[in-house]
Image 1: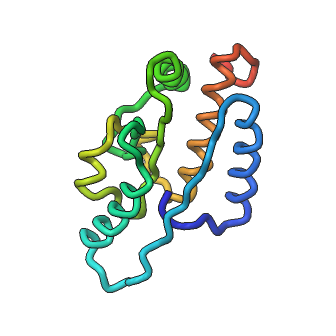
Image 2: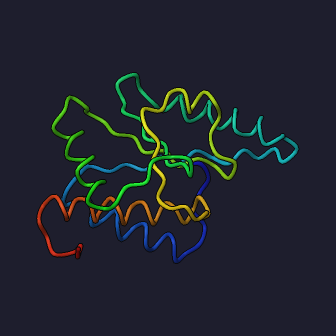
Image 3: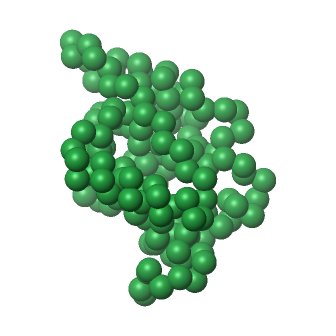
Length: 150
């Protein structure tokens, strides 16, 4: 994720879902600092962020970019996707939330898939909470727990 979450209500929600997820899976958040040079073009900012993102990824990571151009899935479809990856040889699924301008071409090239959480636009800070809730929801679906209602 690019940039820190600063809103207390988002931090509280993120921490709540990270705590809940520990029951099901190992989840780690890695924050990449915002690029401080505000004189950069959008393209150059994306490239600098992309370099920092790719430095954190390994060759064996399965990279899913959260991007508005990605495939939309229902919560049940997302749960099935996770189950398929858990049943395969994928050891590490890395979901990446980019900065305010999206991803560099290098990050797009490295990504294995792109997901869109909505056709609506959300701040990259808010998407963190929304995504973690969906990750939690998918895990409860896989365990047959009553959190999700069809």
